[in-house]
Length: 341
Image (cartoon, rainbow, N blue to C red; front, side, top):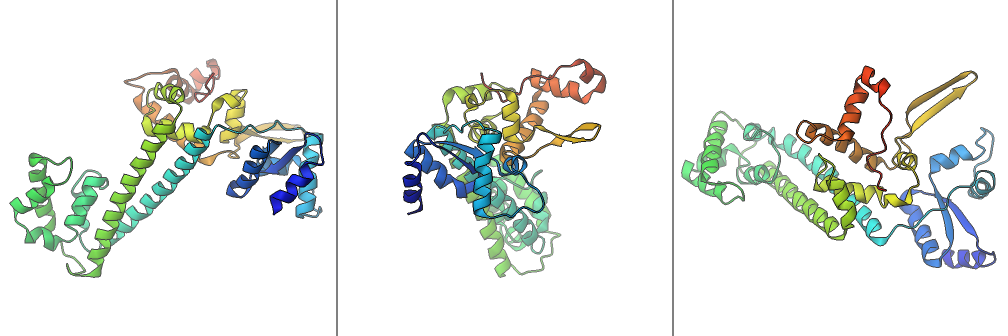
């Protein structure tokens, strides 16, 4: 009913443009409506809108006043029209946000599993160099209590472990020995038939399911990803498949940006500025943009730096020079590594 009324009002004007704040998922239906109806629009960041509006301390704040002041922005400081991204980019972003939620669920489940194991079999966390991954969680599900390890013989443990993908005979023998050595000095607070053991097994299975689901989401993103974009991202040493796909999903079609500065602002890594009287200085990054893209880019730079001894590239050289104050003075700022011409 609301969109029908809005359509009637828009039809009273000749080539109207709509300006609205990007309020996360709440503004998406309006954006979809304007795209399908064929109307121009400006989707503006709320923080940017707040700066552009007359934000004195005594002004009234109502929906009508905010709508009026948003409209005035286009007269006082016209903003560039927003461009609808192709469907594959929008679908990839949805998949990336789904992946992000699965990742957060994984972190929570890992923490819960760690706490639960402390009361039953904390020594099992020493079984592998890193207590994480499908193999580890499957072993925890099998031997969630030291009683189960001591109850099985060496050959029985080794045989069960070989049923886990990626564990051969030699590895299963080593793990069986380690499990027995860890279980012998262990003293559990809860008995092997406690509900706490059931909780540990459920959490281990939950982590296995989450890892499987995350892999399926990445496979789906690869299926729908623009192949040329994926090739470009993968050509950067240190950027692997998952990082490349998530960068495409969060940054979208980079061809819609006219400069690297616009990309910086979109991600929120553009520098802030503070001016008062005769003082004019630069602050840290604004953090006004896509926080997920910013996080992925930060991790990507770390991956590029780690790969630089074996796969050098100009991006790693730039950050290495930037960390050296003597080289940094003589080094000009390179174009953003995310920009696609």
